[in-house]
Length: 114
Image 1 (cartoon, rainbow, N blue to C red):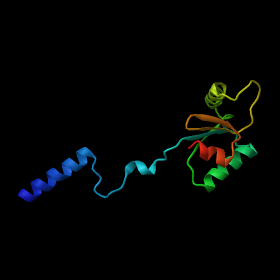
Image 2: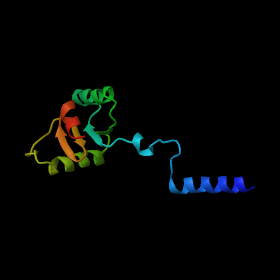
Image 3: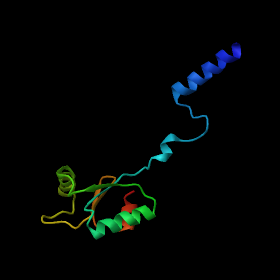
């Protein structure tokens, strides 16, 4: 009976304090970076960027600016706040990495911001 109580108490303590008895870091599955791609499904540059990131096994979120005015407005808000935008149009994709907005970046430019 004493062993059952101690085992139950140990299990409760481990559960309560989030101790990982298997040595796995639950946060290691989530990337330490954030990539958002704003573009169009019909855009060759957008498809190419997604393909390169897929080949590198880099996680990203794709937001189609034709599907949603919210996606389009979100993209433009980020572009307007960037230090490189000077009025006019932009080339797609717009890639947002950890707070940095980039226009048609290369893989190396994306990785540099991660």
